[in-house]
Image 1 (cartoon, rainbow, N blue to C red):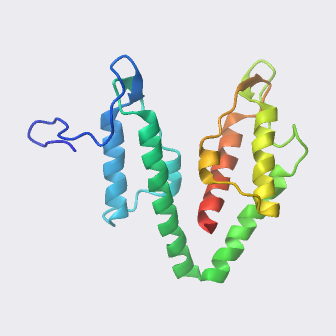
Image 2 (image 1 turned 180 degrees about the vertical axis):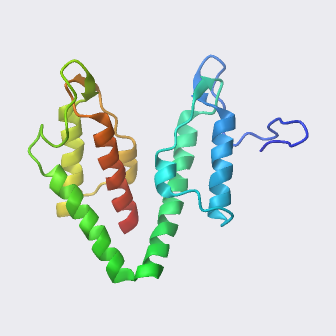
Length: 189
Protein backbone atom coordinates (compact mmCIF):
# COMPACT_ATOMS: atom_id res chain seq x y z
CA UNK A 1 0.00 0.00 0.00
CA UNK A 2 1.33 3.42 -0.89
CA UNK A 3 1.13 6.33 1.48
CA UNK A 4 -0.35 9.20 -0.56
CA UNK A 5 1.53 11.85 1.43
CA UNK A 6 4.99 10.36 1.15
CA UNK A 7 4.62 8.17 -1.92
CA UNK A 8 6.33 5.34 -0.07
CA UNK A 9 5.12 1.86 0.62
CA UNK A 10 3.81 1.54 4.16
CA UNK A 11 3.53 -2.25 4.07
CA UNK A 12 4.79 -4.29 1.14
CA UNK A 13 2.33 -7.01 0.10
CA UNK A 14 5.20 -9.37 -0.82
CA UNK A 15 8.69 -10.03 0.43
CA UNK A 16 11.52 -8.57 -1.56
CA UNK A 17 14.42 -10.53 -2.95
CA UNK A 18 17.96 -9.53 -1.87
CA UNK A 19 19.27 -6.35 -3.51
CA UNK A 20 21.55 -8.25 -5.88
CA UNK A 21 18.77 -10.57 -7.05
CA UNK A 22 16.01 -9.71 -9.48
CA UNK A 23 12.33 -9.66 -8.66
CA UNK A 24 9.18 -8.08 -10.02
CA UNK A 25 9.08 -4.30 -10.00
CA UNK A 26 7.01 -3.41 -6.89
CA UNK A 27 5.20 -0.41 -8.40
CA UNK A 28 4.02 -2.43 -11.41
CA UNK A 29 2.78 -5.29 -9.23
CA UNK A 30 0.98 -2.95 -6.82
CA UNK A 31 -0.65 -1.04 -9.69
CA UNK A 32 -1.84 -4.27 -11.31
CA UNK A 33 -3.21 -5.63 -8.04
CA UNK A 34 -5.04 -2.36 -7.33
CA UNK A 35 -6.69 -2.57 -10.76
CA UNK A 36 -7.61 -6.22 -10.13
CA UNK A 37 -9.06 -5.35 -6.72
CA UNK A 38 -11.16 -2.57 -8.23
CA UNK A 39 -12.43 -4.89 -10.96
CA UNK A 40 -13.29 -7.64 -8.52
CA UNK A 41 -15.20 -5.19 -6.33
CA UNK A 42 -17.20 -4.07 -9.35
CA UNK A 43 -15.62 -0.65 -9.69
CA UNK A 44 -14.20 -1.53 -13.10
CA UNK A 45 -14.66 -4.19 -15.74
CA UNK A 46 -11.19 -3.92 -17.23
CA UNK A 47 -9.88 -7.19 -15.77
CA UNK A 48 -10.40 -10.87 -16.50
CA UNK A 49 -8.82 -14.21 -15.69
CA UNK A 50 -7.13 -14.12 -19.11
CA UNK A 51 -5.51 -10.77 -18.36
CA UNK A 52 -4.31 -12.03 -15.00
CA UNK A 53 -2.90 -15.22 -16.55
CA UNK A 54 -0.83 -13.27 -19.06
CA UNK A 55 0.29 -10.48 -16.72
CA UNK A 56 4.00 -9.77 -16.75
CA UNK A 57 6.15 -7.34 -14.83
CA UNK A 58 9.61 -5.86 -15.33
CA UNK A 59 12.41 -7.48 -13.34
CA UNK A 60 14.45 -5.19 -11.11
CA UNK A 61 17.08 -5.68 -8.44
CA UNK A 62 15.52 -6.03 -5.01
CA UNK A 63 12.00 -6.42 -6.39
CA UNK A 64 9.15 -8.56 -5.12
CA UNK A 65 9.74 -12.30 -4.87
CA UNK A 66 8.64 -13.77 -8.22
CA UNK A 67 7.28 -17.02 -6.82
CA UNK A 68 5.20 -15.27 -4.15
CA UNK A 69 3.67 -12.88 -6.71
CA UNK A 70 3.01 -15.71 -9.19
CA UNK A 71 1.29 -17.75 -6.46
CA UNK A 72 -0.93 -14.79 -5.56
CA UNK A 73 -1.75 -14.21 -9.23
CA UNK A 74 -2.74 -17.86 -9.63
CA UNK A 75 -5.20 -17.54 -6.73
CA UNK A 76 -6.52 -14.29 -8.17
CA UNK A 77 -6.95 -15.90 -11.60
CA UNK A 78 -8.89 -18.75 -9.99
CA UNK A 79 -11.21 -16.29 -8.25
CA UNK A 80 -11.87 -14.34 -11.46
CA UNK A 81 -12.39 -17.56 -13.45
CA UNK A 82 -14.95 -18.80 -10.92
CA UNK A 83 -16.82 -15.51 -11.07
CA UNK A 84 -16.73 -15.48 -14.89
CA UNK A 85 -18.05 -19.05 -14.94
CA UNK A 86 -20.90 -18.15 -12.59
CA UNK A 87 -21.77 -15.10 -14.71
CA UNK A 88 -21.82 -17.16 -17.92
CA UNK A 89 -24.03 -19.80 -16.34
CA UNK A 90 -26.41 -17.12 -15.03
CA UNK A 91 -26.56 -15.42 -18.41
CA UNK A 92 -26.84 -18.40 -20.75
CA UNK A 93 -27.87 -21.28 -18.53
CA UNK A 94 -25.90 -24.31 -17.38
CA UNK A 95 -26.71 -26.40 -20.45
CA UNK A 96 -25.40 -23.78 -22.89
CA UNK A 97 -22.32 -23.24 -20.74
CA UNK A 98 -21.56 -26.98 -20.71
CA UNK A 99 -21.91 -27.16 -24.50
CA UNK A 100 -19.54 -24.20 -24.96
CA UNK A 101 -16.96 -25.75 -22.62
CA UNK A 102 -17.28 -29.09 -24.42
CA UNK A 103 -16.78 -27.42 -27.82
CA UNK A 104 -13.65 -25.62 -26.60
CA UNK A 105 -12.29 -28.85 -25.13
CA UNK A 106 -12.96 -30.70 -28.41
CA UNK A 107 -11.11 -28.04 -30.37
CA UNK A 108 -8.10 -28.33 -28.06
CA UNK A 109 -8.23 -32.13 -28.13
CA UNK A 110 -8.19 -32.11 -31.94
CA UNK A 111 -4.96 -30.08 -31.97
CA UNK A 112 -3.33 -32.13 -29.23
CA UNK A 113 -4.21 -35.38 -30.94
CA UNK A 114 -2.17 -34.51 -34.02
CA UNK A 115 0.92 -36.65 -34.59
CA UNK A 116 3.89 -35.81 -32.37
CA UNK A 117 6.15 -33.26 -33.96
CA UNK A 118 3.24 -31.76 -35.92
CA UNK A 119 1.03 -30.19 -33.26
CA UNK A 120 2.22 -26.61 -33.79
CA UNK A 121 3.98 -24.52 -36.42
CA UNK A 122 7.76 -24.62 -36.32
CA UNK A 123 10.19 -21.72 -36.40
CA UNK A 124 12.97 -21.76 -38.99
CA UNK A 125 16.00 -23.92 -38.32
CA UNK A 126 18.00 -20.73 -37.64
CA UNK A 127 15.73 -19.66 -34.75
CA UNK A 128 14.92 -21.21 -31.42
CA UNK A 129 11.46 -22.32 -30.39
CA UNK A 130 10.11 -24.59 -27.69
CA UNK A 131 11.42 -28.13 -27.45
CA UNK A 132 9.16 -30.29 -29.61
CA UNK A 133 9.46 -33.38 -27.39
CA UNK A 134 8.72 -31.43 -24.19
CA UNK A 135 5.70 -29.63 -25.65
CA UNK A 136 4.38 -32.88 -27.12
CA UNK A 137 4.66 -34.53 -23.68
CA UNK A 138 2.63 -31.75 -22.04
CA UNK A 139 0.03 -31.64 -24.80
CA UNK A 140 -0.33 -35.43 -24.63
CA UNK A 141 -1.17 -35.06 -20.94
CA UNK A 142 -3.74 -32.40 -21.76
CA UNK A 143 -5.25 -34.67 -24.42
CA UNK A 144 -5.53 -37.51 -21.87
CA UNK A 145 -7.18 -35.08 -19.43
CA UNK A 146 -9.84 -34.16 -21.99
CA UNK A 147 -10.36 -37.63 -23.44
CA UNK A 148 -9.88 -39.94 -20.43
CA UNK A 149 -10.23 -37.57 -17.45
CA UNK A 150 -6.61 -38.22 -16.43
CA UNK A 151 -5.77 -35.94 -13.48
CA UNK A 152 -4.20 -32.62 -14.45
CA UNK A 153 -4.16 -29.33 -12.57
CA UNK A 154 -3.91 -25.78 -13.80
CA UNK A 155 -0.86 -25.40 -11.55
CA UNK A 156 0.91 -28.08 -13.59
CA UNK A 157 0.15 -26.19 -16.79
CA UNK A 158 1.05 -22.82 -15.30
CA UNK A 159 4.44 -24.15 -14.27
CA UNK A 160 5.18 -25.87 -17.59
CA UNK A 161 8.50 -24.67 -18.96
CA UNK A 162 10.23 -25.75 -22.13
CA UNK A 163 13.85 -25.73 -23.20
CA UNK A 164 14.83 -23.91 -26.38
CA UNK A 165 15.37 -25.93 -29.54
CA UNK A 166 16.50 -24.83 -32.96
CA UNK A 167 13.60 -25.26 -35.32
CA UNK A 168 11.26 -25.93 -32.40
CA UNK A 169 7.62 -25.11 -32.00
CA UNK A 170 6.50 -21.49 -32.35
CA UNK A 171 6.33 -20.17 -28.78
CA UNK A 172 3.37 -17.83 -29.25
CA UNK A 173 1.21 -20.61 -30.62
CA UNK A 174 2.08 -23.04 -27.84
CA UNK A 175 1.49 -20.37 -25.18
CA UNK A 176 -1.91 -19.49 -26.65
CA UNK A 177 -3.06 -23.12 -26.67
CA UNK A 178 -1.82 -23.70 -23.11
CA UNK A 179 -3.68 -20.56 -22.00
CA UNK A 180 -6.84 -21.87 -23.69
CA UNK A 181 -6.42 -25.23 -21.93
CA UNK A 182 -6.09 -23.46 -18.57
CA UNK A 183 -9.24 -21.45 -19.35
CA UNK A 184 -11.23 -24.59 -20.12
CA UNK A 185 -9.97 -26.42 -17.04
CA UNK A 186 -10.82 -23.44 -14.83
CA UNK A 187 -14.24 -23.17 -16.45
CA UNK A 188 -15.19 -26.74 -15.63
CA UNK A 189 -13.81 -26.94 -12.10
